[in-house]
Image (tube, rainbow, N blue to C red; front, side, top):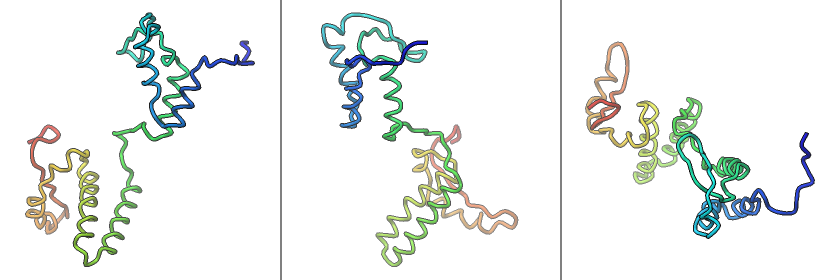
Length: 173
């Protein structure tokens, strides 16, 4: 069994860099790495691999495993890690619609406030109902959607809304 301590009184794991990053919420690792690579010591070579695609020759202490794991946790805690393909749940969507409804009622009679509620509500519902990603929602043709809305709302068997889209989308034209 390897003893866990006592630890030496030096900063082998770059905890000073980690503390600086926590204090300033800046990516000091890149700054330290860039300074190291520009220095005389940074010209010495050792092999470091990240994943399966990046091979880097470096002796920089910021390439250590401890700092890499710290950075992953740090970015998670400050909200940098995103999951772009994570679906919005129906619960979240219903809460959003409820909020939009309340804002619409509060904006009664004020067309500017109603416009400020209507656009994000339409964007959100269109993205959710149409399975669209953020950049695809502006492809929605509001004029054609409105023009054909009666067809879906007056359908004898299945009430529906026609969402007209312009341009190339999801391999369709």
